[in-house]
Length: 596
Image (cartoon, rainbow, N blue to C red; front, top):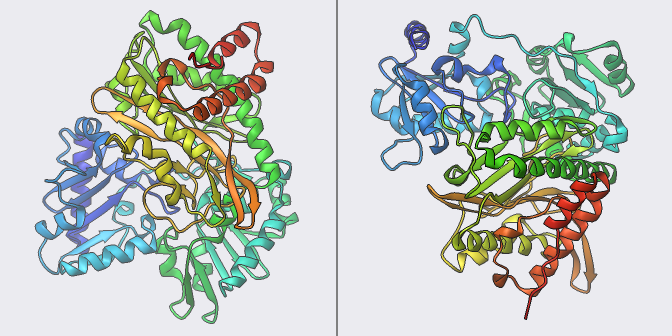
């Protein structure tokens, strides 16, 4: 803790020299990434807190870390003795950051931020909010001045993601992108999101955990495409590939000077929700700025036939790995030796046995008993539970295969479930089936379908606080937009080719959590005199625990869906299993027949 305190002291000394009264340090990177490289973990360096969500604010006299309920216990332990107060977001007594600053600073004080770590939209919003409190936002990299021994940027070479997986070459994608730029009346497009760059150029890497992206920037012009990337990350083969696709190359940091040299007559397209403020400040002030959602964001959300065929192959592999894992779990749970972390490691091992497995698509959420009620639970050695042959386990996990990305949640009974657990699980299942079987007209938004997943619960005064569905990438980010299914309004309409999760849940604090998640794919349904309709193809292949179902609460149509789904799971997965595995899967997929 002395190390953290000395770092804060050094930061404050630098703040005094620079005339800065407060410094805001988020847990982000210059690319608006979900997962970030060690080089950019400024918040962790200054505070010692390593959770996925949180922002540190340091003033000349005090300091606080703002994080949500997932990390109250974890953050409290890591901040102990550092002099940084834990600010528990979501509690009535906790002020938001700007409100808090307005109470501890005086009018005219300056608030410093590293502009690389904030999008131009969030920077602009923060600046306006601080101004209302008579505080000034200043773009200054204070952490960079004091963190002198930071890790280097990842320099591992990237690799080409073959068109046999992508279905389109980089040259073909550039044509599509330029057509979208023309619609936006833009001459230049600045690309900073790593998944956008990976998709556009058909390249992948291992620069961060879980997402196979490459740290780079890109600049797309009418007749020219430039990839800004560290020279060490290129090989002769990848350099030849980029040349073959008419992609020029420059060093990673050269983008700043390149942007400054843009002609003032150019109209520049930027995604203000992703482009960092530092890059935005490099653009000539005379350039016309077109601030809109990245067209790549929309293009990559619609998967082509080659990509979807790959995803279906990945789902088979994932189903096989999950089957082998759950057989192992059933055989060993009574030992008392299994824990939330150990089963997560074992599941990863089973996935790694499958062909073309690259890694996990996110950190496995293994929530046993009361931990299952923590929606984004992350098991830690000091707080994890040991599993017993009782209660229920929520297991949310996914894999990255060259064929595609998977994400599945299953809730299973490790002993005899209670009547309430079965009722809750069945309500979740009813919502899952209602969404899986939805037929809806072209032009429908995810927010219009969200009620289908919640109605059975709402009827009884129950609900869940998270979204029902997020977009998923193709061997890319497991959380990918712009589509979603949630209560919040999202103007993006669901289109054929989009892949999205179907994951309603139910959480009883300090008792257990339930979630049933499959990935689905938007496909055409019937066309009538009222227009074209769409529907979902369920992609995920693994049984839903029938021990947790109260079949009396299911309609004949819902039972038919479940039986049909289980038959497809068995028919697809069983040929890949040994005899014992087939018998086990057959039992789990056994059709339910209602006894009159």
